[in-house]
Image (cartoon, rainbow over all chains, first blue to last red; front, side, top):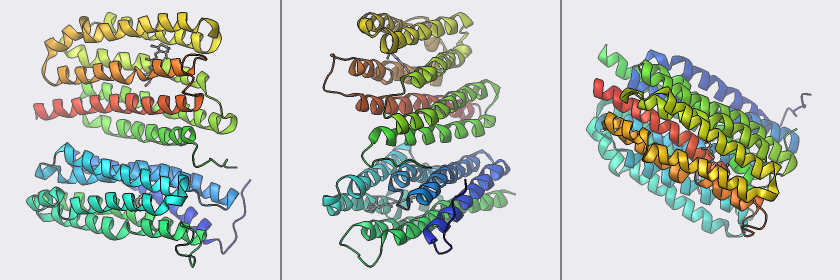
Length: 233
Length: 233
Ligand SMILES: CC1=C(/C=C/C(C)=C/C=C/C(C)=C/C=O)C(C)(C)CCC1
Ligand SMILES: CC1=C(/C=C/C(C)=C/C=C/C(C)=C/C=O)C(C)(C)CCC1
């Protein structure tokens, strides 16, 4: 049975569009990865995994929304807790040319897990202390942004120079601007904070954010791989 | 229809996350295996099979849990009885460089099947004698640990030396520490033994254990293959 979707159900619309966009992006990354040499292939494979994981969760979230008309917070966090650490892996992979160590990767992964676990607690478990959990989560987010914008990751990017530095910078902007969408959504979803926004709009915001951050992030890396290949040719 | 999942249903949460993580890991191993020469390709293919088998069983277990709110013991053992022997194959495959014989592989497989069959009987069939079946199972577990830590497998790893020895050691730690999670779960699930823990927590423990043991184990082997490739280049 196919449930009908109201023509003005923008949350449903963005869940459908997002789901298909993620599937197409995953197909694109998986099918083009073999055009690159080994080093970049792995980065593009990881971009494919990120969008593939998202495609599967968007299938659930789409149907969850259609059946329950309720935000699928649970699935969002299952998705994030897998995809955000993989984005941290991407930072490490592109900086490996400049000698990035695994410890950088683990540090970013650790911070991202802290950010998401505390965010989930604040959003779904201990709502009375949403501000406290949001604060801890925000500190972890800030630490990630600091590490890549000004910390050791930045130093490695400068050492690598050229296209790698450019791509690193683009990814940094994603983290600073693209990821900032999520704490806005969190605040919009916390009762008594922004009563103007309601739950419906929150999901539209999250869905647009996810498309930008997951597909856009992957395309920056794809683009970097293309540029490095042309340079060598 | 998509069933709702309570936001504090951590068993459901770890079943979902685990399922997706296994799928992504299987995709990763399958799509990157061709970057390695034949010897390592097979090891990575087996890592892919282990996570693929787990992904399928996690799909069942996730839905079983969502519909019945009961531990899917049956599926767990179906999964283990396939994946644990494959892990024994992995030990054999990486020690082949030092001349490991198939008899080592069959010995480990035999012990793992004894461990799991007796464990299943104690957990699901003859609960009154849980202690006896658990004891036999524990002896088989101990024999596996002995074989790889101190027995003939250890000797072969030392002969191989270098990265193979390092990877072997990492896998040994998985068996000693990572696998020890399961007998703890068994004791937690046996009535009258650890009343503090309940069935729900047992599944969270098993799910975290599976993610560590299946994906982590595979990544150790992937890492070994990368190091061997770099050494040759
Ligand atoms: C700071 C902060 C948050 C940040 C979430 C972020 C930054 C999520 C990023 C998700 C991405 C990039 C997903 C996939 O593409 C939360 C958890 C909402 C809680 C409130 C404080
Ligand atoms: C010793 C012992 C057990 C050991 C189970 C183990 C060691 C399972 C390993 C599973 C793995 C590694 C799964 C996949 O990744 C049982 C059967 C619980 C019964 C009680 C005694």
